[in-house]
Structures are given as structure tokens and as C-alpha cells.
Length: 190
Image (cartoon, rainbow, N blue to C red):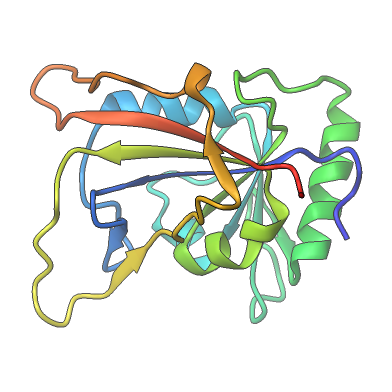
């Protein structure tokens, strides 16, 4: 059960084929997109799986409650809030927000973010009302036997693009890959 105070969203970057990671690592380096992620999620709890936590170059991500889902970890590492279920993760997020006493500010109206990896995105998709996708203007070549993580496919019967918060033109900065932000909102039930 999701606490009423939570407004859950998911945020990820993907290539044109939906790839979000190779061998557990983000396969591109776009500082402007990392900045967008930081600005969108700072002040909010972020919920991730253990592999996503392990892949972070610096832990915890500052200015956020780093809630890590794991069925096998029993002692939390420094800077993490450990949860062994989605329900527990959502409760921890709600408690953290209450303790902060300040409503997070981002243009998406989200106060708790799902930040990966692929299984966590897929398992929590029914719980989120907003999805923010940075679409990287590339198609990765996948070497044989590489572990590939893909984003969930958003069903157009359930999701619609919020044009106010989505890009028409490709963003670029220096010699970075181009990318666009697409914001999806869950359609109201019929």
C-alpha cells in the first residue's frame, strides 16, 4: 500500500531501443542530463535496487534519502535506508518526507522517485503516476554476451505525454550526445 502523502515518479535515461544500462553501468556520459537528474531528485527520497546502489560512483547521493531495496542485505551500508519490500520502501520515503517538513520542489510534482534498475522500474511501474525519460539520441551496439538492462515499455493506452514538460527539440551541450526529455503522466481510469 502506498502512503497517501507519496507522489511517486520514475526517472531514467535510455537509448532509442530502450537500453538503460550495459553490464550494470550507464553507457553514456551526458553531464547536462546528470544535472537534470540531480535537480529533479534533490530533496526527495529515491528508491533503487541493490545493483543500482552498488553502481553509484559516490554514495549516498546527497540531498536525498537513498532507499535501497534488497532481499539479501540485512545490515544497511552507510548512507542507505534499507528496505526489503516496496511497501517498506514507500513507508520509509513517507517518514523521511515527514521528518524533512518541507515539500520537495521540482517541475514534475513528484516527491519520491524510483531510480532503477530495470527490475525495480518494471515492478513499481503500476505505483507511479509520472515517468520522466531522457531519450538519448543514439542506438547502442550491444556486444555479444553483454548484460543489457532495458526500460519498461509504456503502454500508450495507460500513459500520455505531458507536452508542457517534454522537449520538442533535441538538447545538446558541447560535444555530448543529443537528448530529449519526455514526461509521461498516467491517464485517468476510464
